[in-house]
Image 1: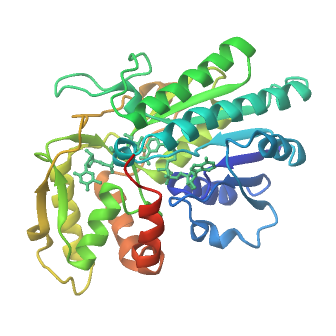
Image 2: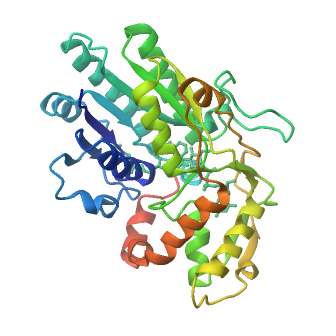
Image 3: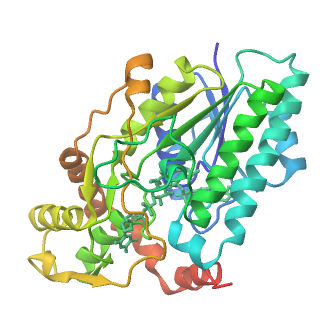
Length: 355
Ligand code: NAD
Ligand code: DAU
């Protein structure tokens, strides 16, 4: 059966990678991107789909219940893949309101609308609400703790992760209370093409190309577990086709690394692949800066449930995924240059004022 998929946040980093993946691998399905186009949304990420008759873009806010109701009915949506969120931890520390609004209230609005829509369709078992969440809901690990499994208790530490935890709890509650066919995924740090340059990897890549300093927070010993976005998209495909309703699946790339080692690796690869760097070797640009408040020390994901039950595994190593990603930033300055322009910075700052 072909699907009509609503992709919230489909103009953002992971959402747009997912839409590009899905339209290529499931061309019979109709994909409707629903996105507010905040500073993080970018229609350039979907530029090659403009003439695809199976693709539609609708600009709007997931908190707008009337609009969401209308779209679910008019487009006969069978599946929601919910990516839309405020996603940057540093911004959540400076200005948390939008995180509560979009991540908690927006998810609640979608759940209510989907419940109503699904009930009108006689509670079809083929419908799905896939909620894309984060490993940050589990809090921070010590160096010798085992990686997070789906059984870990929630212990969010930032306004961002607390808002995502709130949204996960709502999704869980809607499954248990109303039986709507939900699935939650919690993944680790993604990286790849179309990643907004406020996040570590694209920021470092672009600063190296521009000869600007590379700010490493605190002592640089914090650990993240990196997942190549293409592996993530395949995992979401697997979960959508084979995952069990009401379940949670962790998704990770088995790539734990300290921030400072990652930044050094980025420098090394950029020195090899980027022509005419203003500062070479680029590791000279590394600068230790003030730490992020409440900075989680370590994340690591155990994805053995997804691997054993649904037979998914990540293909990319950090080296192969990073090489592909960094080459993309070297080749696509026309994508990231406008995000650094004065006009864009004004808009970006306006939306990022300290509360
Ligand atoms: P992103 O910030 O790049 O994109 C978010 C998208 O959501 C943007 O296109 C934005 O315009 C849209 N959006 C924001 N508020 C909206 C609203 N009210 N209504 C409609 N659209 C709105 O985020 P991302 O990195 O692609 O993350 C996608 C999802 O994956 C998020 O839910 C995030 O919590 C989760 N996640 C991300 C990572 C990661 O490493 N990037 C890891 C784990 C989980
Ligand atoms: O773990 C999943 C999460 O990963 C997602 O839920 C979030 O949406 C996503 O933004 C990401 O959160 P992080 O805070 O881990 O990602 P970020 O790229 O902001 O930072 C990665 C690490 O690098 C973190 O330890 C902070 C550090 N850092 C970050 C920036 C932007 C620096 O040292 N310097 C920087 O300039």
